[in-house]
Image (cartoon, rainbow, N blue to C red; front, side, top):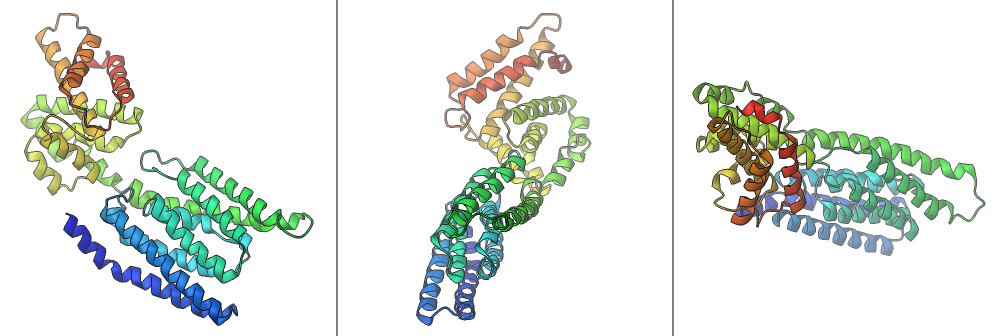
Length: 392
């Protein structure tokens, strides 16, 4: 796997070199258009080359170390496409008023399609190009760096809960505040309403561009497996329908497990679709590995099911821990209901016993699930006493 990543990393090297050479050449040519002296242009070209080279090196390291966010490691070329777009924006900004630069988009776009550190570093290098080419001050660099970093921080981890209204509003507000402080308040003139026109226009344009970027991000990252999940999580799917015909008991176990996985995944703000899928299919046993390959299960669901099948006594993924707990509760309650249909069952005691056994066995000692999340699961199971009637 590591060799494959290194091989892909070098295959994308030409795209990286193309960006660096293009940026350096354009800095020289457009610097001439801006009538920047030759010695300063040469220095700007060297800084551009070194800055983008460091950016490429950093991104490559993050990729090889598995630090990229979302599924960006599977689509590394996205980053360099975004870098090319950002480069075009940077050179265009060299000829625009400093108060109208749409760099909020550049910061967020590059971070979403790489990770936080790569996004901030690469956007900062592109911002540096715009500042050098336009001859702007350090205040301009600072205002876009601060507002861009703040926006990147707000837009992290969108895969769990794709709500962007508040981050968008706060990002644009920060941009307006920074522009007011760095451009309007430092202007050598009395405040005038016309001075606010460009910052407000920039805020509006940045909002529209960010919305477009987020729509693209949602379609290629957040909801890229929506249709696949609609298919495999359909109880009339041929695989589940076949299981229902062959072994109705195992099928019912899967249905009830998926219900609890969905409830807990929603409560803990995890990937509900992946957890629900794991609940449906975990009872297939060994054939599941072949089914996952043939039906091309989404990576998140595949990772949970693979660990569930291959893990011995301890698991590492939070989602796998939830699947194990849901399966244990459904299995235990069903067994007790079938064994003593007329006997009153203390469900709270049963659930406490199950979780105590997991604790004593150290099943989740190496898992990233917290004690608070385990307690939250227990609470959900205890609140579902009426649902257990369906397990009879």
